Length: 199
Image 1 (cartoon, rainbow, N blue to C red):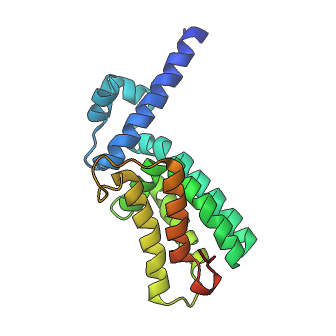
Image 2 (tube, one colour):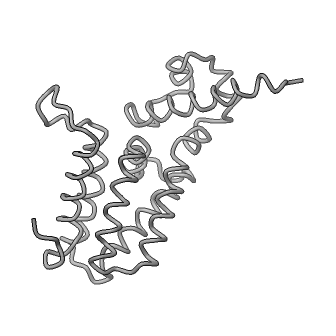
């Protein structure tokens, strides 16, 4: 019979396994990551992983599900506030904060979303991204506007996770600098030119 003293270690193990899985899914890919690799990186046995998560798909759900919940909430607020330039500007700031807080999860479901179709949590993510695209782009938006959205989302996800490898090696940027740069770039991509703030 478990005691209360064992509960924190179980919670800690569950959290550690989820974090390690997220790192592995983002860097190696979901398909290339095994439960044994996750166990090895986390310092647990494979049976410990299976004790906490019934499958690799359950671990993926636990790892990226909270970020998808946050994205769905953000999308709901954006839709409720309308498509005005001001609403887009507020959305972009909140979206950048979301991206910064969920780098690995976003990288995982944006970059692997097509190859992992059929997994329920990935289907949720794909639906949220499609809803976001539909909300950003007008129904009759030209292909170039749709491409801007794709470049903005995928580019931001890639850059945040890849550590901006195209920058000088060893060059570090504070999150505030990264945030400001992302807000500026996404504003250029997602706000019509006549509505962008002047610099």
